[in-house]
Image 1 (spheres, rainbow over the protein chains, first blue to last red):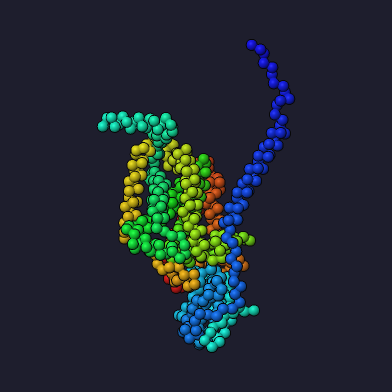
Image 2 (image 1 turned 135 degrees about the vertical axis):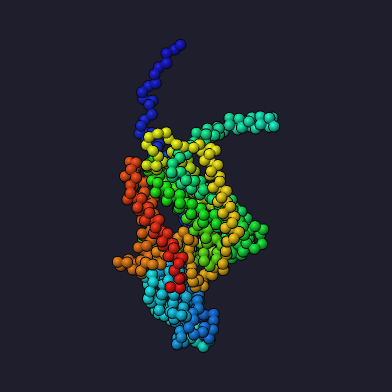
Length: 156
Length: 365
């Protein structure tokens, strides 16, 4: 039986080569994960809808269709607004999205002002937050009655 | 009969040789449950698991009729409730079992919290449990929207709006959560995907870890519950504990059937994104204490929006709950700390009190 020669010491794997391979595999793994995760994350972020830059809207109902001491929700672009006819026959238009947590507000005839049912927020007829948790006023819109039409516009 | 038994034994041997599943049987044989004055709390985890299984079963059945779109969701649930044989029963059980599961989950959480079962090496079991609670609450939140009724619509509007308080990324997060600027059909499909695919997968993974850890470490004996001297009292898991578990499960099933028959799930009116929030709007009862807190906080506290303070407070409380095994140093060494017991009691009292106030106050005020 021939004596086996011990392997030459130079054949030992070079540590820097091993390190290089580890580095290569590691970065490939990171690159691979990134190339999978990036499209997935981008996929989950919804595309920005071209929000209609609404400056003014003409309401689909006539001035006489809203009685005194009541309110009615209308679409201002893709957001809700509220039109109010007061006891003294004035028309007010406000954004209907509560500034607290985004519920849609309503007109309370018994209080004669605007109220949010979600967290008991109160606003006056100009949208000022007067009680409850809302931290900011509702945006007030301009109301113009032109014959049969009500035109609501943003305040400049 | 003897030949049948012989055949079954051979089949079992054949299966065991290929899978090694017999080891599980040996584990079950060895497993026992300590007996002491707090043993009754050990049943809550199993009860929660049973209710989860009910949820999976009824949830799969609901998928046969449900349609996840803003135009059809409400109508498909209406059809299910009115036309489909036992549709009302399946949906009612799904709704009631969800509620009961949250109840048993909270009882399980608080019993583990008060009995200090979270001390190492069971801290990882606690972490996975708190995360599972988070998943269960997300299940509830996403599932609530699916019938697309008015109540759910506004609860979701409010619930998703809360993420706005996250600094810098708030607006962006709301958009990702809702699938757009507002709660819409895009939100519905998103919540549907989360409710029926993402959460079940995450729950299965975490629950696997949770149960495995429970097997590995066995039941925790609360500090001071077992006498320091004398023999350790315990009952075998199989069949003694399991039989008792089954009694509990059958009772739960009977309660579920009774609740579903006498108080079937309601549907309400269809969601309308251009209608004011109805009076008496409220979230699921297990979010009521948070909802009520947000309602009571003033608009500004020390110059910060009240809502931000509230949400931040709940985030910190959640973090405290999660990190409890790390924070509660005294208990780690085997001495039950009174301070942490009182904090747990305070949390329970706060949640119960605010929930009660939420249901008792007049919604018009």
